[in-house]
Amino acid sequence: MEGAVFVVAFLLAAAAAVFFSAGHGELPWSYQICRYGDVLCQQPSWLGIPALLSLIWALFLRVDRL
Image 1 (tube, rainbow, N blue to C red):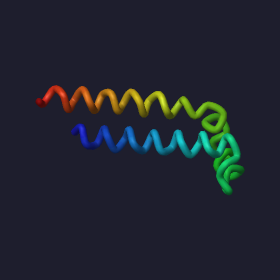
Image 2 (image 1 turned 135 degrees about the vertical axis):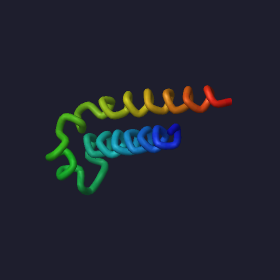
Image 3 (image 1 turned 120 degrees about the vertical axis):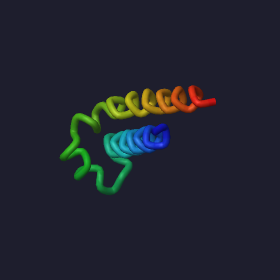
């Protein structure tokens, strides 16, 4: 179970990094990404905060089994 939560945390963090980079125009395809996810380009923390919370949750699941 906790392995799946780590995967979700990683995917959310990767998506937040992509939208952050696209929002600052650092990627060659920034226009296309921000065209479909304009709100997330302006607020990448909306993906970063759930990524952090799911990572904390996965760590709680792992500590519970020790």
